[in-house]
Length: 547
Image (cartoon, rainbow, N blue to C red; front, side, top):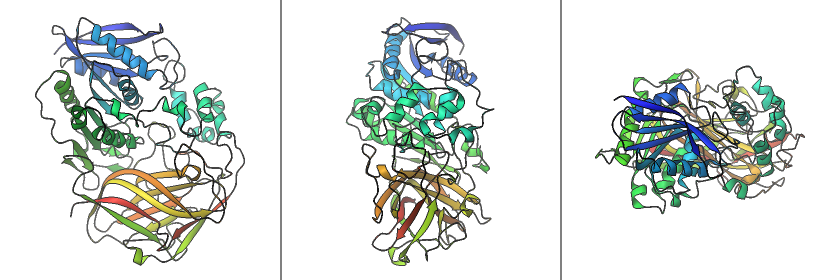
């Protein structure tokens, strides 16, 4: 189907700010259902224009617009701050146009996904469906550190000013090491007011609640397609959002009409079958355009399309797609692996083991020293465009500041499918430190493939709304969310679990002093014990899939 374009359309907000967009119309006669897409990355991006042409060629009007303060839109760009109100006013404007049939859907990924949720909280009457791809979570969910993590500054630089900046010729690791943390943008010769303001609010308070949505699903009553990848560094948001909508107090229509797709992808979903050095096979890429088109046809055109089962996920290792009635699947059961050693689990050359029963634990502890001046590295690209992947941690696991626990070679295939959670008992000699955990698949050739990981900053162990420092000599139970994972460990492979206190630069370094996280420049060495006894059985839980 042919289409036509009206460029540089100005939509005037109630405060007088003009939002600029291009509208792609079908060649057929109006009225049309409309899809609204808003971005801080420049609406003229070739992929964004391709999406607009695709939907317009299939009967939808498509508004492709720059958010406030970016591109050709007026106003000041303050990330997320104005997006809910602006989104509602844009949808109301679209629905009032003579060419509109009054039904509007929203579409987009990453920043463009999270602002859909903020818009939905404003209750635009014409919003009938959403497609949310790789949506970021609320503050402190993905990075429960109390402050912006170093790599976030590369994103903030990318969207500084009005046009997308080049990030290729900057020594980012040097920038990320800046102390105090609040001065990180100054290493780029910049000042971001929102960065500095965020640094003041180191607990979840009204400042952060104003740009949050994940405790407010009861006010969102629309069908949503949720899309992410196992290696999307913001993957957890998609699972929280799907579960939140399925269990919300909104309409039964919205609860029943949720769909989730999880592929073997990074943040840029469905773009390649290969991520890093791992190729997930020819089935890794799907016809996502048609799937998304049918979603909007169903809810904006009232076409009788069978959406199929709610959950479609790719099981890595087996490299195949599986469909389920819901998530988590009913054919899973919770299991645990416990850590054990004879007191020397440091590095992959130590004696750390994973056992299936508390009765197999060697009572004792492992100790390691964390030095913030030499933090344990996290394998990643230089900027936040993609944070981590199925990387090989063999070299990282040579370090003595990493405790490594490994199973015996598996006698049969084992599939993990669902959330992974660690329950770790520790004590330390500093008032604050971090506990990180990672789950890996060790291949027979020694490759140690990262699957999922997470962290807890000890001062926030009982929630991000308050600070509780540690006391020397006390044993503390630290729970760590490693997010979600769908992976088959083949026969002969080993399961590896590691514990450490830094994942730099993915997370900001804990300087271990217990002082203000934004302004502190002093460092303390942390001597930490990880306890594994029958009374304090450090372990991680997961969902086993299949027989």
